[in-house]
Length: 408
Image 1: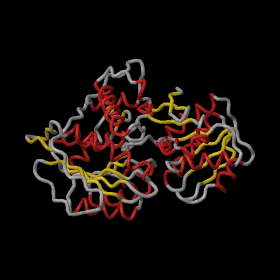
Image 2: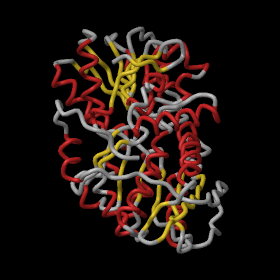
Image 3: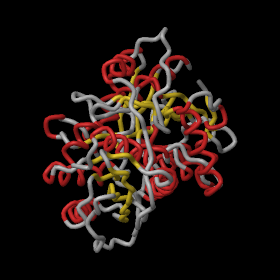
Image 4: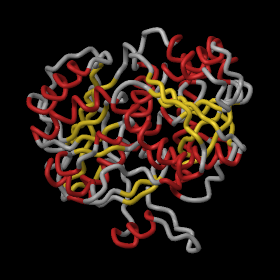
């Protein structure tokens, strides 16, 4: 998929990097490989005509609301890639995808990453929809020097850069999400806000970013409350966040925590708006038990969520439209979090093509030159920036009639 033309009237970080890096082609590959999801580690080493990608995903356990979406997206994109093959040097390689279920357990994710790298000898790793599983894989990827594309939120996944040379992140940076959210809050005339943030690195990134962004627009952050671990009761945390009747509450977390937190906020008496970061955008957040609580809530999310408004005027938009149509045909509804898995495969395919090699070191080097439009949004990687989602890929959505509808 080639990068689409830039708007010449807007000078963005993406535009500057694109001018330096040039257009990169996202291309495809051959026959679909085995995709065991039962934890087996007996897969054979790669053949000369394969690009082998290992994926550790939360297919069961607390993170399955997001992990399953990635499996679905990868399966769709793998089939597309495998229609023609990736030209890598003088070979046309097929993609083999080795999927493992880490059961939402960071220790299991680390074990799988190690075995996929050392025994299966994958060329790259993808996965970790939770910050905790991604951080566990980060340690393995750096130690074994294998490229890792994380699907989780949390700025610490790619920072500090000197210790994350093989690590890349597709989700938006917390500072960009918080700034877009702060502008929305200010535009709604809201002056006093409480923050209910998840435990762990993702929540830490949100707390730092929200404090700064709200201060810049003159909105008062009246209190910050941290949620307990997934699966524990959110009642006490929600009551503390709702105390003093703030005008609005920001819930910074991921599904299934986001919907559960909103439900407890309503039970605690909060009647004002709720604001979500992109981690909330999954079917679980809009599900039956949460539906009433999240109606009227806002979310900042990449604009791929606005499937109905796609005009399909460019090559990238056509690819996005095809992906979304395929996803809906297979699974009934489209989830905005799903495209990250698709983009991870595409970016690695492009890196292999550009590098004319599946060598891990060359894949790493060519990942950090990619400036392209994926299914989820625009990416602009650089040697000094391994978190690639661009801030102008973000939009605002309003939950109405149990659906995410474009607000601005």
